[in-house]
Amino acid sequence: MAADKKYSIGYRKVESITIDIQQQRRADGTILLQSAVVLEPYPYRLTERLQYWATLAPERIFIARKDATGQWQKLTYAATYQKVQCLAQALLQKNISPHKPVAILSENSIEHGLMALAALHIGIPYSSIAPAYSLRSTDFEKLKHVMNLLTPGLILVQDGEKYEAALKAVCKETEIIAVANKPLQLPATLFDELLQTPVSPQVAAAFNAIQPATIAKVLFTSGSTGLPKGVINTHENISTNWQQITQTFPFLKEEGLEFIDWLPWNHTFGGNHNFGLTVFNGGSLYIDDGNPTPQGMATTIANLKERKPTIYFNVPKGFEDMLPVFKNDAALRQQFFSSLKMLFYAGAGMPQHVWNEWEQLAIDTIGEKIQIVTGLGCTETCPSALFASWPGGFAGLLGVPVPGLTLKLVSVAGKLEARYRGKNVFPGYWRQPQLTEKVFDEEGFYCTGDALRFVDEQDANKGMLFDGRIAEDFKLNTGTWVSVGVLRAQLITAGNGLIQDAVITGHDEAFIGAIVFPGVEYCRQLIGLPVTVAEIAVHPLIKEQLQQVLQTLAAKSTGSATLVRRAVIANFVLSADKGELTDKGSINQRMVLQHYNTVVMQLHAKLKQANVVETSK
Image 1 (spheres, one colour):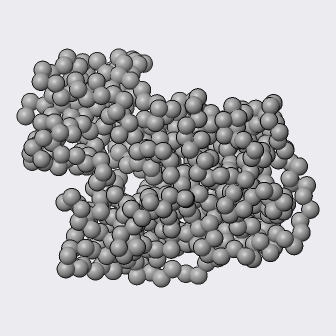
Image 2 (image 1 turned 180 degrees about the vertical axis):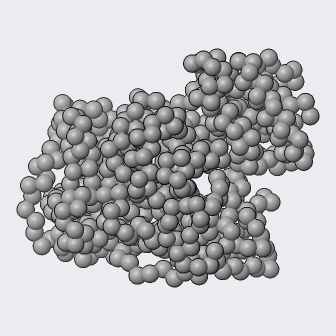
Image 3 (image 1 turned 30 degrees about the vertical axis):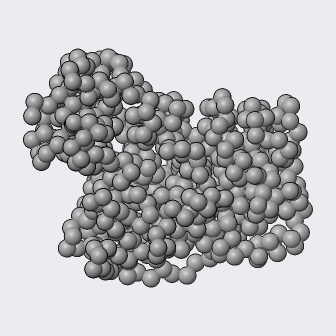
């Protein structure tokens, strides 16, 4: 693809960026990839865009959320900007500073968004903290760690009573602002009182003092390998990435941009990518209080019946769980696809069968395909680094570097590690210089630990594929390296719906094993009964299908490093509370291996256990 406005027959027409990747190969085998597309000028302060849209389209809806009665409470750009200025003035009168940021303990909400924008407007860092740290914990270990590291000068809570136990554990002398229900035993100010603050010239002065390197926010990673660490995002980091994304998907600049989204703002996908793109491009964001759980899905579907998104964002599990509902509701499909230009997934790999089914749903509903897109990035790249932005892709295609970013591929443990350098790449971890020092190489590239490979080594324009996490890979007792990410993807693909996810085992063992998490809906349809997960795990028909999957993969295996010899169907459900699932629904392999060591031992016992399926190869 080397032409502007390239369209593919069979797809809804969407303007796309020119794909022209320049490649440099060094004598040591290092490869540098960079887009020839020049990054266009852009404002480095997000609220400059807020002010722009408040002037150009004052009555356009910026943000909305349903209230307790099920009615959408909406806020226009003009009203948002006015409230942000009042909040900004109130913050300037509080005990906050670049060293004492604003902490937000809240789910996605209008007030959450306003407080974030107010802090951005005056150059005070803020941090949206995962609600799970406050509401699903009893010892508040992660919350205490985050607050001790952050040292906030002010804490916003959505509901003072709901968060009171957490506040007692961490608050100490920090001022509390509550949107609703003041804590019963802690002093607090109601959020609405701050909105009455008269605006002075201090606000404009603080806004004008913001520099590109001014810290905008601190995003705490999920801490899958330990306690969370705070990723610094400067104003230049996040604004650069919004410009990179907008140039990659030019239709974002078109009028009528609408998102309906559940992804949490304490994560970079929801909080940077989706929330920020809305403001940057003057879109409308409808907050979905649902999520990819049996309870949350009903809320999500109800909301989708009322909106017409331009892009729909979700994690692969969310897309998979929505399929049965969409297949059985023609009116929902018609509504959903009517204005849709793209389906976008991130956070994990999408199984090809899920991709295929969504493409077919679009064809059946509107007579053409909708582009399904993903990319690669992380909290440290704010978040986007690569995108597969053209029609005709497939599950797992990560695409090419965004404009203004250099991708460096370095040989590590026999793979190509992705390293990034660009203005969207973070400067370091909040108050943890020892961690910062470890993740940048001698040329200033951020070392991701992600391994990539070319779709076609002769044509970089065809993009990159994920080749696993270098840190997840392990050696068998023969010294042979096992590529965990690749094997996991092969299992899911070969299962064609049977396997929702898998954890690969075999570190220092004689062979590779797998703990398989079944596609529950697929299995129920296969069995013909509404069986439980425990019943699925021992059902002869499911075990037979799993053995067929192992045999299929074994036939393609080239040796011990690519042969999954044994597998067991999980008879348990993973827990987000225990860190086995991330907030986005993806599996934390390290935690599963740690918590279910007895299952791993059964897989690798000398005598095969009754519940273990084994290939005959």
